[in-house]
Length: 639
Image (cartoon, rainbow, N blue to C red; front, side):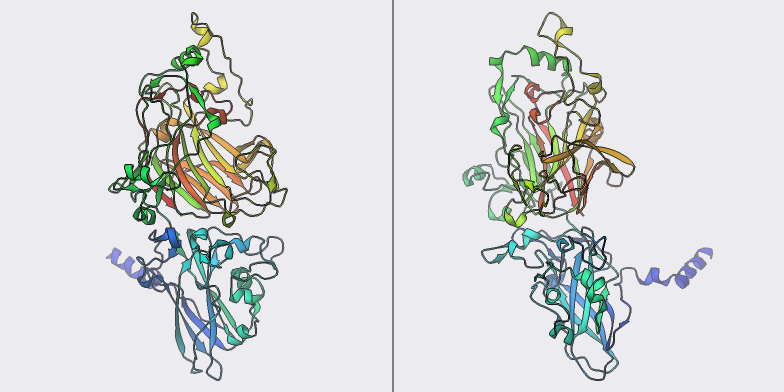
């Protein structure tokens, strides 16, 4: 009886808990001088609170469309609101729907002068009708009968919503070049007297969001909520009380595409499988492609001619030191890291919905240290990229490194003009990824990269020597202490750890207020992260955190997250999605945050350790693999 009484009381005092469950939000009545609006619902055919997962069907050619035809009949949201004409005569009214991504945006108002639009608010992902040239729609004649009349329309969220010419190619609107963002979307309804439209009291740049004003694009949320539009007569502005949450989950079991720019048609045909290939069906449907590393010929290694199962054999530091010292120069194997044949190093499993990465074993006379990786095919700007995976272990029980770098990284989708970053107004960016300090500086570039690189190396900050000082010993085979020299104490302190390196390639833009070279502390959530840049022309800023190899790569799986926001980047790792910890943080005070479209890459690769000055182990002196090194990708969520 007590339970029943409690249930009755809940119904009496909290009816909203029962009524609102799954029901659409209803806007209150809002009155202007001559009309009243209520019950605004921009997504009337979508269940309130339900997440929308991006539909990858045809997204390669047309970009993501929200909603897809598999999610909503017809592939459009149904917009509804009710309007009452409180005037004395029948008349038309004008209205327009706007949407904006709220998760990854700049504030609409300037931080100093709130009457002005924030200088970057025009970058926010906002839109209206698909044809940006379509201005305000008309309700049709509404009788002055003091009754509410239902107004209906439809719209959808598409890429390049302002229809900017920079994303066109030969007259075609390549909407995929500015894909919709993931996260929460808000909706704004503006209803006005038609005279405000005809007499351009509402500016043309708000009627057609693709038009520039003297100050550039005008964000409609700023104009109508905080700017001049807030005071317009005979105008009602309503913001929908709920939001639409959009998530991307590319399926690792959806197959692997082989890019014809990397492999010939004949080569791809020889290796084609049911889940990996180059033909049109793979081009249209697969969310991942095999990643092909650029191999710099200048990074050639002179490798010891040794094949070993470093992870499972009892390979020790003494073995490493012996092999490092006592092979003659003419015995060494001159190689670079190699790339895999099509469909060899990345296998998609449609049953388990996972991807397996494989660095294949080597053989005597067929020496190879072969990289493996995949790259997503649909570019995005901003998002919280969370990867669930089990990548190869890097250290054995003797804390000897197997030579692999496990990397999870975002890279520019294109360096063409359409994908240029925001202008750098303090001496520009370094023009090229490859290039020394004499490289020219330019106002904008298309290159961007955000990295997790996890390997056996050393931190440079805050108190390490650059690089650490090693005792190299002497080549005296008769006295083990002369050649089997221990590492310095600061190296041995992290002997069982690998370094989680978090890097943003800002192309050395000096615009951030606290841009620095050298070692500098960055504070976030009461913790200090030490950021390192070699000099003011060095193109990247890196933070390093030592972590147990066994925790990250010996467990059944682990999570890695790059949280890329308009003004900051946060790197997190953890054993579960709800138990992640920060291992790197940078914001726009210390580095230039990219705002162009990027792809995600997951690799297991044999880095040349010349890139990692001061590393305890040299790639040249790490054995060739005796067995395949395996990594598995289980899930990628972008939200």
